[in-house]
Image (tube, rainbow, N blue to C red; front, side, top):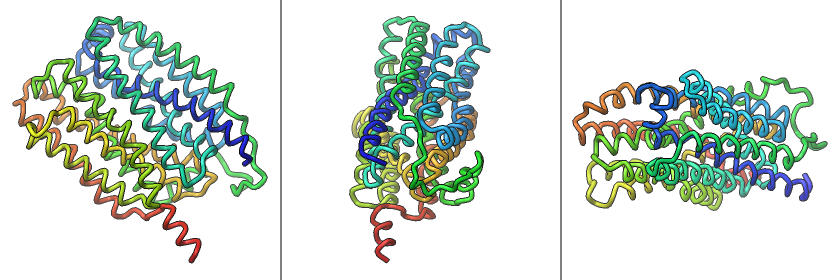
Length: 412
């Protein structure tokens, strides 16, 4: 691919980052506007959280569709369709009906499923393999900036009495505008004459290749176990847990939970850069997971050592390691299934989230209003620590795919 075409892919990637930023704003914002949404949809808090959680049903399943679409139709049409669906999903939140709310949240999940695979797809076209993990880290950094804004910025707005319908209106309009920008700037796909892919690959053939590879499953499960505390706890439940179990004021609870996403802003590009620099993936993956465990242990057993905001920031910093398997799965599979590999890991990652979310809700969410405070909070955190420990154990079965190993294989 010539350098001018790569430059256009990088420009398209930048617009993809805006799409991904909006993805996380929309994903995380409901956590800080639960009372307003309860009133808007005339439901209970527990039912509303279940409604918000339906996002992950379509996000995980549509990740497969997104990967297939990227490999078959390219980034232009796929990213446009994803952003447009997301925008429509936001606008449906303007209707005060539970049916509209559930449909809107399902469409939000479906549209957002195209954001990260699309950005990774464009990055893989525009950047070299030596800088790909860094580019993926920067992508996730922008996403988590959106997650931070969804709580840091939207939380104070809600506190000041913003009309939540105005938020969803402008979120929808801006996302649809971004959809048309992506349609205009993303290069048209042309098969490279030097493309190593088979001439006639069916729609499902890339997924057969990816899912037959055990390394793909290991990557997805590890990423899911590391991602779940962020998506389920920090972005959905944490505000309520800090308010009711730890007796935080709403403002402090919202800021504290948002610090996880803020930690990702630094952790994703930093850990991506380190793993590119040393040419190895697994040591940085395990190191980030260990940092997650240590920060949560401090939060429950030494809470006076430093504020909970710092604990949650450090946890977010370490949980940036959840993005490293996204580099590994691409390196463990053929180049011509780039989009499908990212779609597959998104499917497995958020499949884990979809399975874990109702378990956490049943064990700890339902008892939140009648809990014993500190002990309830401690047990809920130990639940997530157990998941991270499991991720570390599974990572021992991963094959190293870093550039140092690849260069050694070539020289051999």
